[in-house]
Image (cartoon, rainbow, N blue to C red; front, side, top):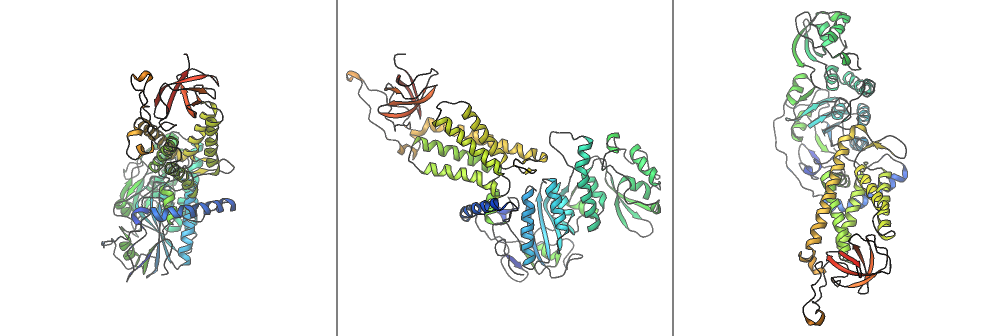
Length: 600
């Protein structure tokens, strides 16, 4: 099979490296791609930024070859049912949150794999879920591919993940894995019947279509989406055929009820003809879209089936581990690694079609703990640059941190342009407050609010059209995580600035940046004036307690004053001082210089 040159390394059955490209790293991040479906201008901007980040990616991401141990494959080899023997298999890792950009990545990598000769595409899923709209589009895209598809749940595919898996021709699972739980929710909100019906309808219809197209039993997916749906495995007494059905179908097929009586019994909580209890739905659920109704049973099925076992009691949303999924017929095999996958599919080659390094690094940089760390380095870099003007290194670190905070989420389709503009507007307001209107008022507070809001929203997927797309309702948890990580970054920055203020002059390396002066003799030679306690103060240690000067701006309470022929930032102890009024230095601590009106 032709090598997927930029995404992964082919590993044929005879020769070739086992795996490369930093597998342990890409397992940490969500799937990403290069192609972006956006307006031409936005595409050009993102392409330019991706090239910049690629330079950093070369330095950040190690390429480490890792071996794969041989493990017996459940079900043996020889090719899976319906798959071509000796197929060229392309594995597309799909990791992390499912959102709009995920579709672009799958499309781009799938088309590349098909162009380079892949006859089977495996989606390796590890996702907690994501946006319903994105999952629906991905499912439809998968069912339209011209090649066979396999979903490899490794290790989990919840919510939107199982919707994507169900669209594939076949599902296999890792030896320790789980799937299911696909009810639409909005954290912190109780959806009204109409809202729940609106959210459930497209989900259930997509599952119904996937079940029909791929030969799955719809009852399993139904129970993953709706509370109160029971699942039974039944067997035809004459043919031995087995099916998974809900409690309404069970009443007809096993209990011998008429179609109308069975539906009524589901709502009333009566027992079937053979005494098997059928759980009643709450009155409000019995009338909602998605409640259990006769789905597959016909009059000809009445009493012709027998119970094999009860799969699910309906008290929770159905979630299956790997063994239960095998028992229910959802998963066809247990596959632990690429060697087992190759043996199970009877493949000639298995190739990992990985995202680019730029995409990997960009998505890694959007992780909450990484963004909190970047915020700390940004603020500390600015602080150190102000402490020792002209240093350069601290300023460079601050610029790099700011660039990564803004560019990374923009490259992976999380940030919207208005998020970036909101953050930039906040920076401008803060600068105006500092340099144009000394003090701290409406501009400063507004700027901080804009910067905080922009940083928070940059990593939360948005939905909707128009100039201001907002976070999707189901992204409430993601929004909360972003707020928390941003607050952690702010708190860490405050702690860091306080520590540097107290110990700037005694820290290794940093203390070399301070120009210290010899103590000055006191008046009449009767002692020495104490040297400034904050050697890192603006003025490079030459501002002393007792020095006199003149206010050159309003001090309310902060502003600027001229002391020892130097213009410095100062603050009063709360009093307001007019320009050109004489002042005296009463305290110097770090870069905090406190003055009072002369003669006070």
